[in-house]
Length: 159
Image (cartoon, rainbow, N blue to C red; front, side, top):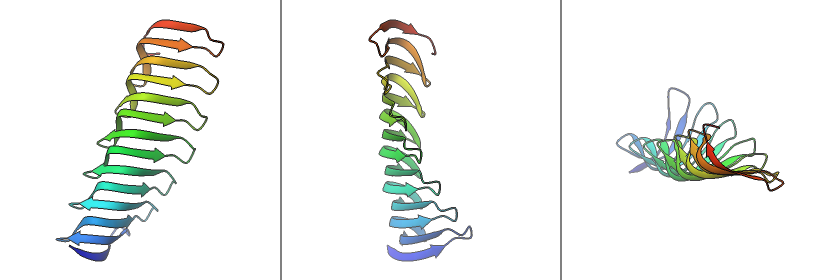
């Protein structure tokens, strides 16, 4: 492996380890739009641990595989919200926690970036829903609680 600097036709640059003309090992790539990735590379793709800061200000730190978020990681948004948990092929999948900018929190299962399976959504005003989710909606058995303590326990259908 050798250490080098490369400028691409698109205007992006790479500084780091290379093998056979491909990014391999540790390195930093800066895109023309302001995106910056610093971390591990394998076969010219983000692979291993790394940090991506987008030109928009959103940033991700965690595991990568074959160029996509894969494994455990955290994504921070410029609006103050964040997601911490498991990723599969670039999407939130498995167990995770999403904290909205307003302080509301969902903690539970995800599938393809949506609440799916069992989870709890808690609002800052004291309301919460705990139960089953499908494709981002309350669906199945669950409990909804209002801030005054009233409860509804039953079956929700794509609510």
